[in-house]
Length: 334
Ligand code: ADE
Ligand code: ZN
Image 1: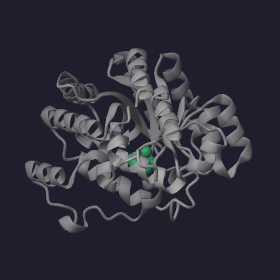
Image 2: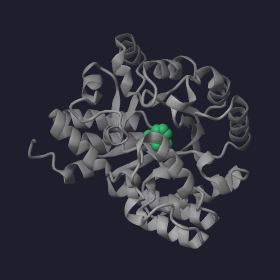
Image 3: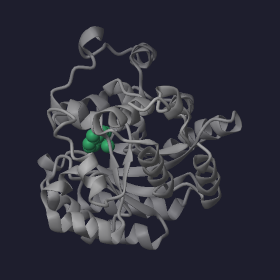
């Protein structure tokens, strides 16, 4: 590994994190505190709480933890802790995915949900921590009318904290859903919301095709299975659509056995715009600077490669233009 790419220098690298779920940012201590505050038992012993067998079990766990967050103050605390986390990894902006279906106490009060989170993000910004834009997410298994209802709400409210419509969840379970969600994504795009789509993780290349052709995705979350279709790789390069890649998440949730098999570097060398992200860092035990370091070590990335991946994270983010310009200036000096 080149001398100058220490973890400290990767931590200091000016960058954005653009694929990270608030649901995946609760620490073990948070579970215990929230369960105590809610008067609920842990679903299994503390030592085994973070053992998951694949994506389905993982997503069910998110329902449990988010279901414990019941007051505006608890929401604000989660948002503030999120900003502390990304700042401590040297990210200066985050697009944070939040899926209301996991947060059962807030399902019928989306306005209160966004306001509670916004209060925590605002306080964090005032304290000099990273700023955040909310990507409000549909679950793949929701219906077209639930999607329409969510988009109606987002358009009616147009809360300045909300930057994008997203869709996540288990595509293997839901099957192809591009047509089901096309109308909701089209309307969101027309209303000025950006669009980010989980695809090419629990779906193959067909999920990524649907995301770009039917959902108008500005970015793809994961997207790594695009590597299985040369024509798709060419389309991603030609259209400049970035992939928000999460290498370790893909290993832990069973997509690839090791980084040897992981396609991030093959995609990058083919000309696809890729960024490095953590997905669900607390639940998967990850830090952003370590994800960069793993790529540096495993794929022999030099400083120019790291800089260009960080540049993609900034340019592909939904951060305001002025903040993007500041980060790019700081990146050039890194
Ligand atoms: N929600 C949280 N993490 C996810 C992942 N890796 N895939 C799909 N949905 C998610
Ligand atoms: Zn994700």
